[in-house]
Amino acid sequence: ARALEAEGAAAITTSCGFLALYQSQLAAAVRVPVAASALVQVAWLQFLLRRPIGVLTFDPASLGPPHLVAVGADAARAPIGGLDPGSAFRRDILGGPVASFAQREHDAVAAAQQLVACHPDLGALVLECTNFAPHSAAIAGAAQLPTYDIVTLVSWLAAGL
Image 1 (cartoon, rainbow, N blue to C red):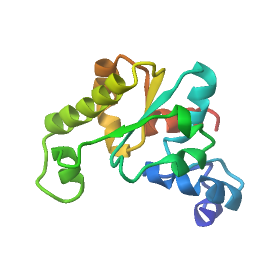
Image 2 (spheres, rainbow, N blue to C red; image 1 turned 120 degrees about the vertical axis):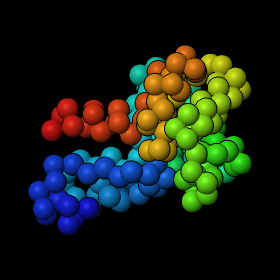
Image 3 (cartoon, rainbow, N blue to C red; image 1 turned 90 degrees about the horizontal axis):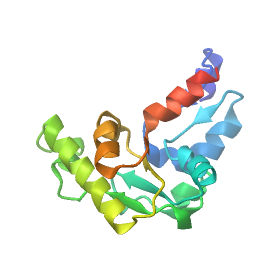
């Protein structure tokens, strides 16, 4: 982060939602704005919508309350759902057989629909995984909820620079 700032970066983002754990440390290390994870949007949305915000993650067994707390979110009001461990999407990202765009989208949409079915009071979804961004519109349509991802975060951040 310091090297990027020294090179003239106006802001710093990362590409993995799991880096939420390092938001505070990265932000404290530099003077430019830092957005370490799409998850920083969870706290904003909880405040704005006054409803639980669903988090869709690549690996629900590995993402938990510490990631949400690290970005100022109320973990109790942010149910987490994610890809099935055997999904083609996960196998593809982890170096297995390449899945088609349609198959990856199917898996992401199915995970979102399952999260919404278990938590029908959600006000929005935040997509932890950067690899979900190409499927954000399909997820939003299927879940019938506003959906936020790394692209919405970077767009917001860039608008203020």
